[in-house]
Image (cartoon, rainbow, N blue to C red; front, side):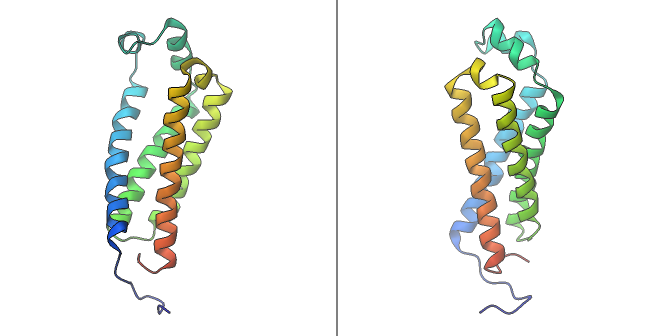
Length: 147
């Protein structure tokens, strides 16, 4: 039993998960910046059809906001894990909720239909990683690894 206020030694897998979380979310931040600054020309250069471009550029503000909360929350939460701060858990929860909202938005606004299976796969992986990071933070809090 761990006494209240006592911090236990972190297992190596924790550092791997937190470090990969930071790297993954930095990559996500680059993707987010590309999404919010996208133009018809930049999307066409990536091989999108005119119909796909129309859908992509008509994404409502709240979906871009959810993407931002998801990725920035994931990055901050991962950094908080690296500094062994228990605030990582609620921040990563906000990230996961935002990504689930984005997933629902992609369904409702036809993004999955327009962009096809690759978009479904990518966002499914994003949600799964956000859930895994939240689980690591939750488990680490329960084990008194974070203060």
